[in-house]
Length: 294
Image (tube, rainbow, N blue to C red; front, top):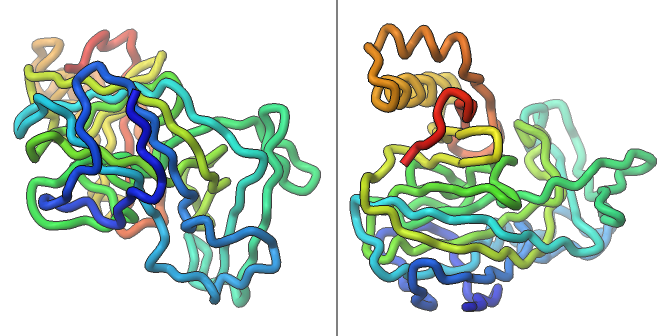
């Protein structure tokens, strides 16, 4: 098993990233991550205005996966997400969906115990998930706070223990990096953050040569999520819907019209997050409709 420590991190997914380690397909990797705020908050007295926002959203890595090349798909199985004893959530003026209605900033330290997150007197069952997971893009550079075809800051709560994420490979070695882990997050992540935690994420990587996907796909026990991130949420929803229809058309040998109808009967359109530079939509296809994606 390879262990990647948190001082080996990036703040942008770039076509010219330098790997910190090489691994073989089928190898298990542990990514030790900082929280999304760069471990800068230790108490509720911390002023958000004192934070160095150039240190936000560090992603541990990147890792060069031998045998992965342009046109392939990187398959990442999430084996375990370790939880600490506390997390942090922040919000404030101009942050999140309703940030224009706030005049001040707020920091809360959240206790994590017995598989629950404590928010005042409310206990929320944990659901550990990875906010940032991605590979080197085809061209240019994307901050780790931005999601697109390479993955990145998708903030999709289904990317948790037991899930498999399929990422299109654009560069040799794929160059996988992981960060921004949450103990729990609601769809939308509306206030701009979730229960942000430091973590140790255990994954197994594989390389699929049969095809390269257009957008990331998350596989869960119940089915598949096609994840699309674009500047406009309406466009992200439309593109994600089209991707689902095309996938149904291909896998079930349907006409476009028939696949479109089937999507209307059985496919769910959802939103992962509304607060990052690119907004993330996801389309869920039940396993009862499709039993394989790649």
